[in-house]
Image (tube, rainbow, N blue to C red):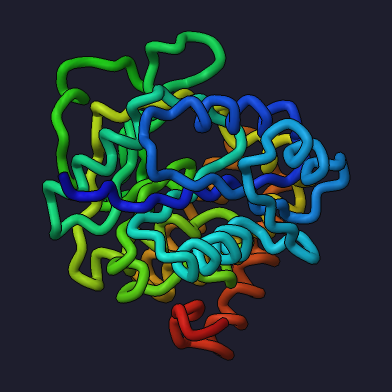
Length: 303
């Protein structure tokens, strides 16, 4: 009988120890035998590394010297996984609960589809109605031009079919080693937001498909670190910077302009005028960064 592929599961943590412990307990109950579990700690201030080592001695903890953001944190774990011979690497948030068979079902889907470089599970809400989907993939929307998540909808038969999708959120992704070697790692010019859309686009440009696998299921507490910790002005500034980089790389400046005008109209209608200034400040910073460094970042050979 052939040996199972080796999987490295990388959980990115930044504070929120209680949620991280719940996530690890869930993952460690997986039925997949050749899985190794790694926590990348993004400079937490709540003693997360020590608590994890004490409670879960089988989990390896990599401590970042500072908060590297989502992309930088994931890359630290991915380089470690690839350096230790991983056939597949999983990147995961620290706010989720998985079914025991989820890893097995994702591996099975990817092994049966060599043209697929990445797979995402069916993701439900953890809080409230736990039969309601948080996300089942994403696609490009023509107006306003943006990546639109299939978000917050009731589950149903239409979501029980495995299919190819255009974009997948980085809440939980299983990535084939060869796809990482060809497409490169996550781009650290995205501190958070649009990092997963950029990675999805580059993976497809490298010739790989992305799968939505409904037989693999998890429940997501939804952006605990970002929503509880980021200051509002900072969040919208980073959002604008990430949007500028993504649109200039994968769409057009015209699409970015249309999206930005729509953003102004939407936030003005909501009375959220305080979001507009930080967004455009970030937009300007992102366009400048993109102009200064137009090439794709974070190949396996370096930053």
